[in-house]
Length: 503
Ligand SMILES: [Zn+2]
Image (cartoon, rainbow, N blue to C red; front, side, top):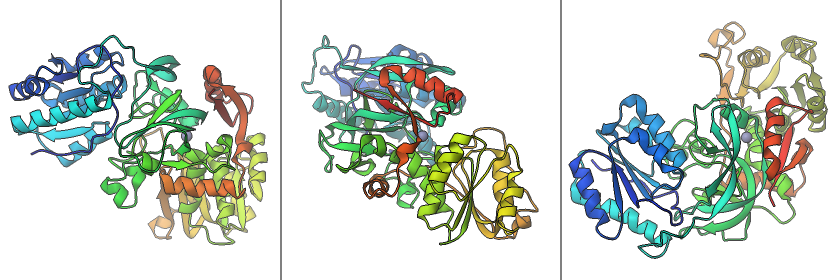
């Protein structure tokens, strides 16, 4: 059976090495590859996919074919992840020994551009490879490009390995037909960047960090209709595949797999670079209005989108009561979002004075300092023992999550925005949950992305209903992002959000 996938991702400018690498010992695949390459292209066969990624050195070929029969089940994610990070702009074709739906979903989530399963017909396979090679040739001009030309390079800030970051030069990415390349102007560091470096999503090699950025459109693919070079744009931190069934079902952040819309600094290079690549550009970018600054618009990517999502998911009745657990940037935007949704009483819970002060400015009516008072008692006291209509968890902590359930009224909503990155279980307190019958709803979500979402958030900036730049406590040029990263990691100097400026 053959499965089709849209060609996405981009090719790199001319580079040394073969045009195609095929990791397989299946004669049908290798013979088809030879036929596809003919005398126009160069081919290298590999029988050791485990070592393939290490040999790429970021100058990957236009096309990589991976036959999974060379890999044990346990190696597959690791090998694919490494290839995707080492050669982010190669078209990756994956050949499965047998078709399974969940396997295909996994392959897509790993950044595979084209998935096939055996049995495969030789002529058909050769023609698929030829079309990939020709597509790439079209992108880079003459069929036999000069090997001497150096790829254009850019400066990036990467997770070189677990617990290590640094600067690295990489080739400027190229746009596939539906993609755009953005020249970065502003970026924000997120606490989740620190989590990633500490291993929250597993090991990564030379992965460009960052998922919150705005910039100028540098290049667009042939199929991009709504954007052109020179446009000032915001890209959501989450860049879903809008053709995916999860997107069509109304859950674009889960496209391809659970959290599959999260691509930047997860399954592909992120935005802490002079240029970054955006898939499905028409659906994932939004024009920034003239009256909105880059400094302000960059908060749409994640902080406003996630914080407001928490308030939207909380289903707050007009005049209703809300408790927001933790007042980091997402919690602060949850407070602001609750106000925008018409909350009558917002209680913020945090022990850091600078955050408490900001929460008041964003509309919190009461602040509970949990270092001095039990937050559950505090909320119950303020609400006359009623509890709140909605509780927002903006930390990702088991105890905080339980407290959110405890303070929520029967019939209320617990809206989770926190990232629960530790432990085997997240617990529900049985009695306070009404032994499962108190109609307390738990809702979860990942930062929504997409053009419509970004346009709505930008409208709030345009009409000055919120000023997210109050959260910008520090500013650094890109050359000093390493310092900013360390400050954010250690939460030094009352840092809330450091803004990174690109020249
Ligand atoms: Zn973020």
